[in-house]
Length: 259
Ligand SMILES: [Zn+2]
Image 1 (cartoon, rainbow, N blue to C red):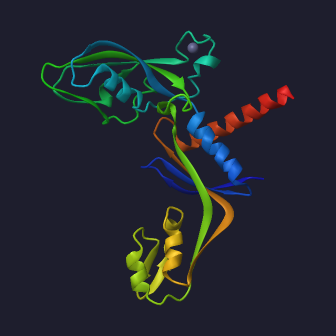
Image 2 (cartoon, rainbow, N blue to C red):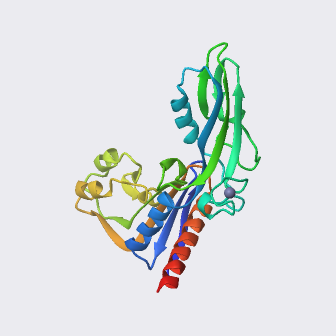
């Protein structure tokens, strides 16, 4: 049975590192692809522009707004194709957000007003445009639920994995020289001895390089998998992982029905 172990949660970065035991890279890659391509989120898809005299062309502004993450409540929203409205657009698959500004200076995401207070732009201080005096933006956005396979703006985050590395060190000839070459803090000096900072080993991309620095430094890889999820903010890391599992189950059920 697959076992998961949460190794690290970095709240500020919206990032989770988990250890997957008794599984393989096929499973990890399936989850990775489901996260990137299938886990749905809300993103701005249509614009009704009443006024835009800012320096950004309508298309540029549209692109920016599309890529501005919106907090997504998957319990209240549904992909258009699965929605009861059959794709016509309703309150379960669409969300209106208005932006009306005419003040000189930066326009921030917090100035946009969402029809659903639970689903607003995630980062209040994300700049959307910059206005000179007398310039104006007045528009209504329609956000819809979509998937990363159609446009990356709907991707909930980034996911990747690697085999679990185990770094061991023995007696080092010149610990100071090795520590100096270690730029990511994995190997640190403790007095005159070299020490492994286990916390940083999973994040390091330089382990193979370190093993070449001294004969007594070695890296081995276990069959466990380190899986890293970074959320763009629409969903929490937990929601992203749980939704990817739901989608996998649904896909298998659909397959089973057809057999
Ligand atoms: Zn609908």
